[in-house]
Image 1 (cartoon, rainbow, N blue to C red):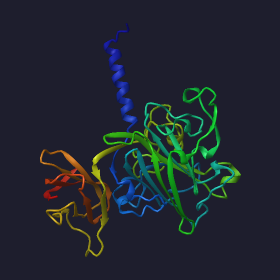
Image 2: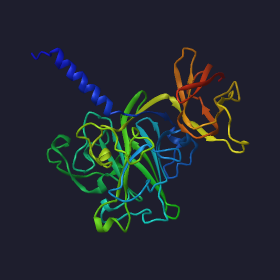
Image 3: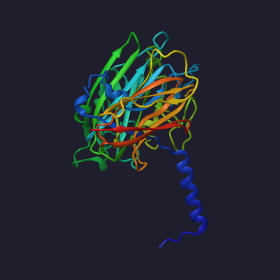
Length: 391
């Protein structure tokens, strides 16, 4: 039997501390939604999406991404808008990705049907087995679907698993001994739609993905990334000119290399294609109900002080509206607590610019009673108020 010395135990603790320092997963509360309310058409125009969990890679406020431009002389990514939204229902993860490209330069949206690596690409990565690494040969690990780790490959209006290529199945993933070569179809585990506007430079992708581990009080790993290309760069070089990934540990610095453990991929594409250690963790909590947060129009001037308004109507059943004002940009959280001090809903969680905002909340999953809602900005409490739900 192996014995551990004190110095050995200290070494193990130090190693675990180093790993936890580098491999930080962002935890995301994903709201539950009635699946009948979502139509997979590539537009995400249902109000439920306004309250979806956010993955804002590029916004006017800042960045949560890691980009590599392979030596091109650029000062910011060619995507002025890049974001994701997530909702869930039983065994289904709903994902909406919005990409807006710059159309008045040498890039624009570009897909080469003959070579996926020369094209604009989107990778949507999922895993219920975060202890299992991705393969390192860029085959998508599609034989591990639907539990994962694997990724969808999207090019233009085509949503595929590995571009529908015949794929070698490693022995540990074979369902039958002779199951060595297979074509894996995205339509077997998902419904999808895209909406493309080449004039505006927008590319929207909407997915309903089957995963048996999407359930109340469970969680799965998730990430998305992709590549940018052009007709001028792709064919001569045989590759895209830039790869990117959602990487929440890098904020407001899109070309900064994120802190990683030794052996991690040195390219943004690897954070989706060959390594699952830095994916976010989506948590499915039945108390995280859909919420809409919008900036109020028609308000005279910018706020001069932080404020949290009384919800209206109050009492309410089951929907209510709450307003708050920010004199400066900051990290905003608004949570709802029951009489025991337990968090029953997170209404706001993200970076917001100066302005007055309106939160629309549907508390249909909660029982009647007295609740408290609290606004914090940059981890400082602004105010706490009471509200009454009467059903």
